Length: 192
Image (cartoon, rainbow, N blue to C red; front, side, top):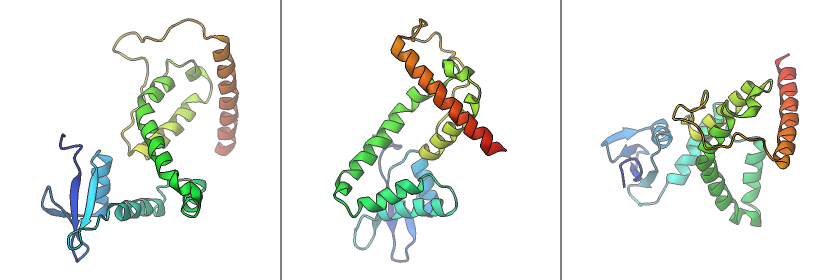
């Protein structure tokens, strides 16, 4: 394991101060959030009892960001999370959330490729505004590690065929164009 993938052990002292065992110094919640954004997994344990406090502190970090207006979680999602604690669905929610974030992280490069300027949708009016919104969303969800491609890859030609899409693809493209037009109309109304 490399240093970037092993757990960073943080010990909480009786004074509630958090101690980074790697650098032998005290850290704040914002420091811990920075470690996580940098790709580190963090484990926070109580020095005296040995209890794992990681979940409690991660929830506190999320709550602080949400309270400062750095909202990532829509109210509907928060309501559903609260409901999941009182329903039988609660048993599948953690697995679903884990799989969703793994899919989001794994699918980033594919999403970037599809949203690049080589995509025929890029020529549609309002596409840049939609792309900017999606970039902001992904940045918020991934801690800022996403870069949108600005044009064709400089590594050479892509493996994508340059032939016409099949009929099903045309139907999908028409549907996407309609949805995009509706989004652009909503954006223009919001700008007025």
